[in-house]
Structure formats: C-alpha cells, structure tokens
Image (cartoon, rainbow, N blue to C red):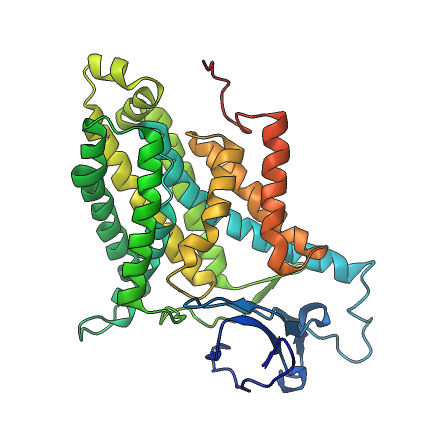
Length: 383
C-alpha cells in the first residue's frame, strides 16, 4: 500500500478469511495493490484488476475489495475474451450480486416506506437502524460482557427483538410526542438528521471504527451455478429476504392491521373517526419497520464486513429504491430496490466501482422525470 504520490505505507498479508487492515497515517488518497502471485494457482483478480485507489477520510474506515475469479486451466480457451463468454459470465455474476444487493436494499426500503406511508416522515436515521441490527447481532454472536457467543441464527432473532423494541419506544417517547405537539414533517425530517448523527456516533463509541465480521459463515466455498459463483449463505439470505418481503406485502393487503395501516396512510383523520387507533397502528409500524431494517443490516453484514457507517453508506440507495418504486408502497419498494441494485452492479462493466452509486441517481432522476409517482405509486392531487 502506498500514498497517492508513491510513498510506501505498509505491506500486509490477509488472514485466513481473506481480510486485512492497515492504519493510514493521515486522511487522503491511497493506492492499494494486490500481489496476484500470492493467490492460489487457480484464482486471479477479476478482470485482471489488482489495484484500487480508495480515499480515506479522517475518522472513517474505507473498505477495499478485490473480487476473484477462476483462472483458465492450461489448454482451455482464454478466459479474458471480453467479446464472448467472459463478458457474459461477468455480467451474469454482477447481475446476481445486484439482485442480492437489491433484496437487501428492499428490506431496508420497506421499513422506510411503511414509516413514511403512515406518518409522512422521511426518516434520515433509518440507515442507523440498519447498522444497529447488524451490530446487535454481532455482539450476541461474538459474546458481550463476558458471555460466550451464540449461533448467528439466535443472535439475529434477538437482534430483531431488540431493534423492534427500540423502534416502538422511539415512537412512543419521541416521534409520537412530536406529532402531538403538531411538529411539521419538514421539521421532523431535519430532526431525523440529528438523530442519525447521534445514533451513528453512539454506535461508533460502543462498537468502534474497525471492520468486523460475524463469527459464523465468514468463509464459505462458492458453488458454480451456471455462469455464476455463489456462496450458500447468499442463497439462504436471498430466500429469507424474499420471503419476508412477500409476507409483509401480503399482510398489508389481507390482514386487519394491514388494512388499518393503509387507512392511516390514506387519511389519518378519517381513519381515527372510523374507530382506528392511529397511534397504536403507527407504533406497530415503527416496531415492524425497525425490525425489518435490522434484518437488512444482518443480511448486509453477511455479504460484507460490519462497520459503524454501513447503514449510512446504503442510505442513498434506500431512498433511491423507495422513491423509484413509489413512496408508501411495499411492493414498490421491492421493485425499485431490485432495479437500483442490479443497475448499479451492472454499471461497473463501464464505470469504476467507486462511481457505481452515480448510476442509481441517474436512473432515479430519469424515471421521476417520466413518472414522478414512481413505478408502482399512485397519482395524487396537490395544491
């Protein structure tokens, strides 16, 4: 690893899980080079790209990833033909990774969409709920206060309970009181930015600024499924994510709570006059939204390392997914998030990975210019 002007910083060797860490002397731009000769004989950097140039900001952690791919055996056709099989395999792999990312974004966007639909609040602290879910599960998984760690499945379940309770009490003692005082949605949105900063710094204080990983499922051999390579944990995670999204979407359409939530979303005053306890419905939605955001954080932690800014890093993608799909709609959050996830991953075929989030903004702007209510949103009269 060197500085941008070529001064050496440090040379490190990865751990058995493929992770590494370097403490840089100051903020700035650095050049990270992977020595391809130290890789196993059958692996090589994807696309031959073994150099990354991250920018490290003061007090933050910068993640650098080197995707690997199988090296062609002697006598086989070269694997670097960009016009035929190699390009197809790369596109298929990126599309699968985009689908995985899109489902994670959809989980987080679903919670944000539910809260917006019932309260009108654009919650900028929602990314910290994602981080909180991953961090709480990590603490239960690795052991806290001298306790022995527990299996990730149990740790995840306890994290959902803790974060769901946090969502309930957050609305019960904070957001609910602001609503009763008649605080406007713009003021509450600005307050949510302050809440996000507070939660992010609290998480950093207790969790630290380093990158961590769950003690379970950190290193799994990939399976070849046609043109793509996938770890079993990703298939299980995607199945759980899709199941939760479908169940919540159907529940909103078929159950009494779902119908009450949709009534509150359409007209809170009319819902209250019809006998619906609006505050109770909103608190249940907050509980559900926080738990779903926590699940998104756990799934994100399975796909990458855990850090205190992980929710902040995908907050833009969450907003893009929920806005693109249609604010306040569950299935809209799913569709919009998948479009965003697949598009930004496939965009790395043409743009540097550091700029892939720009594609999410571009597609968001284009769609909203053509269809302002989003893909599955409804037209509404304004003014």
